[in-house]
Amino acid sequence: MTEKRVYNFSAGPSMLPVEVLEKAAKQMLNYEGSGMSVMEMSHRSSSYLDIFNKTKGLLKKVMNIPDDYQIVFIQGGATQQFSMVPLNLLKNGKADYIITGAFSKKAAAEAKKYGDIHIAYDGSSNDFKHIPTQDELDLSKDASYVHLCANNTIYGTEWKYVPETNGVPIVADMSSNILSKSVDVSKFGMIYAGAQKNMGIAGLGVAIIKEELLQKVSDTTPVLLDYQLMIDKDSMYNTPPAYAIYVLGLVLEWIDNLGGLEVMQKRNQEKAQLLYDYLDSSDFYITHSDKENRSLMNVTFTTPNKDLDALFVKESIETGMTNLKGHRSVGGIRASIYNAMPLDGVKKLIAFMKDFEAKNK
Image: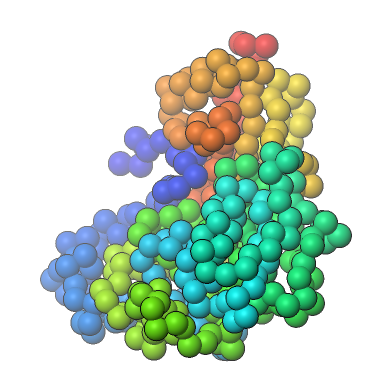
């Protein structure tokens, strides 16, 4: 069956490891002798609770999450947490937001509904090609937290350092680079992510929160937007995204069996370096982001004109690749090379790029 699969460069929902898909397929009709699919299980059943607890345990192990952090599984992906973060963490009504792309901009706009939001940096003027240096950040001393987006899927930039915030907790949206490399969780007050890029399938959001940041929310806060309530109910105030949590468990098992995040990081660096080295050697393709800010996950570039961009996407599909069209807001080409993208997929893309350049230069 796998010989008919394409190399899917989608930014999300993205490709899954073949091993994960094969295991899910094998267990689809009868999960470990239960006589039913995970899709059919009650989330309160012993069989499903075993899956749930194993997944939480694996996430804690793989990311080396300290004991004073809580893990929450939430429906609504990362976008729902644009609202949850200020509703739960704005202790004095003030927060700093660093805008380095479309999703951090949306997060800041949502937070402004609930408090006094200070924009510590806005990269709009440079078309989001750049991640700010420490000196470029205008941080407040009295902010409840500093919010940033760790990897910018649309523009292809990624934070390479953790900013110094003078003790103000950092809240990081890691939707598109979580599980791609080792991260010191203790440097963040909170990490959140949508699952559909590196963690699994759409429909699940994950939040990792330092306990001391949690506080009583307003009585008008919707129940499903209350982190403490979700923690108290172990993510089961209502029916959780049960199958998405199961798939996350399979992905974490795959990462753990490969050797963890250090191995994953080396694999991702090798893929990205190969692709960026080729792009740097070419005067036909133009990369979007500054060289020092390039994402390991989302490689963005253009050909000499929009007609050739469109032809590139069309011909790539004909050769067994898909979803290389750039985001509608910026155009161009985007190759998302998440954990599940094999090295052979990147090599095939580069071979196609060389041939396309030779024919169209």
